[in-house]
Amino acid sequence: MKKTVQESLAEVLNRVEKAKVHSGRSSDTVRLVAVTKGVGLDTIQQVVQAGVKDLGENRWQEFRDKFLSEHSIAVRTIQWHFIGRLQKNKVKHVVPSMCCIHSLDRWDLAGEVERRAVQEGKSPFPVFVQVNMTGNPAQGGVKENELFTFLEKLTALEGLKVCGFMTIAPLCQEEKKTRNIFSRLREVRDMARQRKLPGGVPGELSMGMSDDYEWAVQEGATIVRLGRALFGERRP
Ligand SMILES: *Cc1c(COP(=O)(O)O)cnc(C)c1O
Image (cartoon, rainbow, N blue to C red; front, side):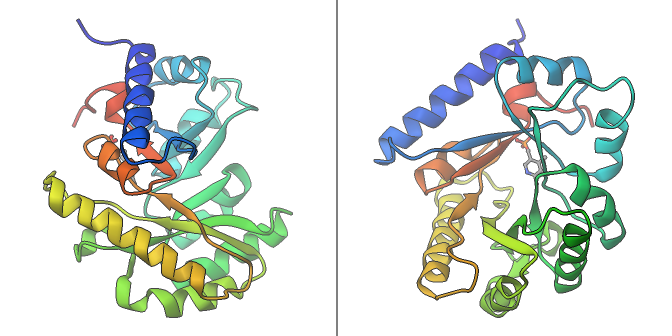
């Protein structure tokens, strides 16, 4: 029988906990962002009722159709995370309605997010710098060798709060390769911390999806972004 959302959530939380203990991170907080792309409102309602407060969407249009319509769920307690490729012309919508952007990877985007954040009274606006650790351009993200230059420019913008870094693992699902990517991002984060950047220490690591979140937690993730592990396979 198909698992209920409650059962899947309990299993995920249990696995996160085990991964934390396994890697000596018992006292760390790992936040769960439930990725609701392709998921219907009834199901989303269940995960919210089960106590999840952070939801992630990767496309503005889908977010708008689901959550800003009159039929939407009552949602004052929820924080929405924008996790997908962001077009500049969508920033004016995303900034007012969402709590943060995980996928900041371009300078022109940064300027636009800052401008809108100031306009909306949401400055400084929380962002994660997406880093491309796989070399696969389809995944987006700043190249590793351009990261620190980008970061220095970014942290000088007063309207942004750089919370940390986000990455997407390779699709291979091979443990060694995947963990390598995650641990590299952790090292990048640690290097960033050592630079005295204006605006403070970007400490968060948003990494780990349904196929690899336990490895991500073991390598230091502070936020995992899970869709299928909670809601089952998406229809193509
Ligand atoms: C879809 C998506 C996720 C969740 O993926 P699952 O494999 O369903 O857990 C996480 N992060 C991003 C950026 C996504 O687009």
